Amino acid sequence: MAGIPLSDDYPVRRVPAVTYLLITANVTVYLLSPLSGLAVWYGADMVERGCAMELYLLRWAAIPVELLSGEQLTGATECAGADFTKIPWLSSITSMYLHGDVVHLLSNMVYLFVFGPVVEDRLGRVRYLFLYTATGVLSAYAFAMTEPGAEVPLVGASGAISGVLGAYLVVQYRSRVTTLVFFVIPMRLPGWALVATYFVLQYFLYVSTSLFPGGEESGVAYAAHVYGFIVGTVVGLLMHRIRWRSGTRLSDVY
Image 1 (cartoon, rainbow, N blue to C red):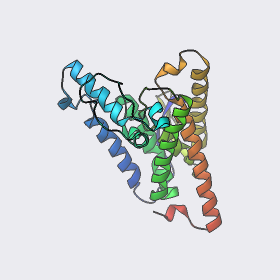
Image 2 (cartoon, rainbow, N blue to C red):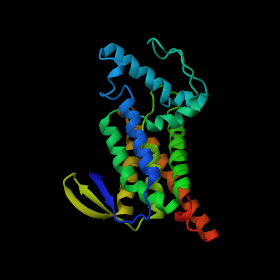
Image 3 (cartoon, rainbow, N blue to C red):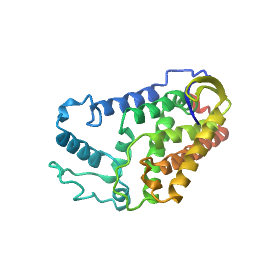
Image 4 (cartoon, rainbow, N blue to C red):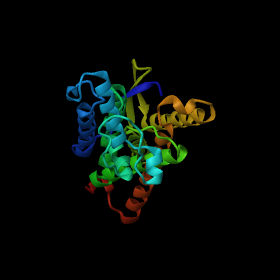
């Protein structure tokens, strides 16, 4: 959807501490990384900084071929300092806190800021954090299975945030979300319509980039967005079923 979500009208009953901590962690990691212009300690020389960025991504980002093989990629760079030891499966978690640029970071954090507090309030803090982490990890592996030989680092919280949107579609679809449509016109839209449109758009982009030659070079892992959303929806449904069976309100569980 050509719009920016601003707020959800669901009145959360407590401070969304986990959401705020996740946003703080994502912003802090970006500012301290060589991908940020503020991290001057990585050097001003283009070659030196380029190597710092390359080594940083190789060490902390998720690389599809590593995830599937369970073995660290070797000989991927000629930069000095590449003799580190990497645990491939762990990179599916660390990559969730890396972002390529400010636009990438802000676009993810806006969605997390608007929809995260609602899902956290409805599911409870522990379940919400589990949902966020699990969908991020599973979306990374799902993307790896669509691109099994890829050696390009995968970064970003989009898979995890897509999972949050999928859960939102289940736990609080009745809300209305104030959105800047076409980035200038404020409108209150049904929450279910907004997140469903997001999924349809991501799925269309995923299919279109898969069908057309060179489409996979877009630089955006649409497959991770799609699978993250699906996993989030399934987990949200399961949690609702558990609540229905037990008679316990998930929003009261921390």
